[in-house]
Image (cartoon, rainbow, N blue to C red):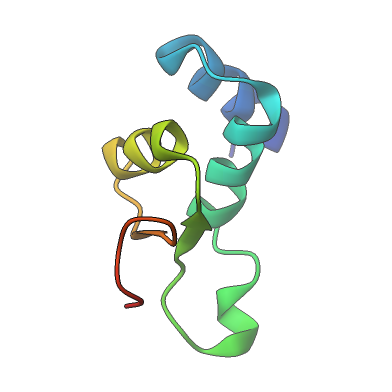
Length: 70
């Protein structure tokens, strides 16, 4: 299994985004929090570029500035 840092580096190199955005994507992809909440993971953001990248990575995304709540 790859490390979180390796996954973050891969996302950064693939999409040329900053480390904090890449870390958010990896965290949601690894599903660290929703397991305990018993719900599907969703990335909530107001950053349209982050939303676009996260969707390319197969994540469910809610852009809270431009979309209705899921």
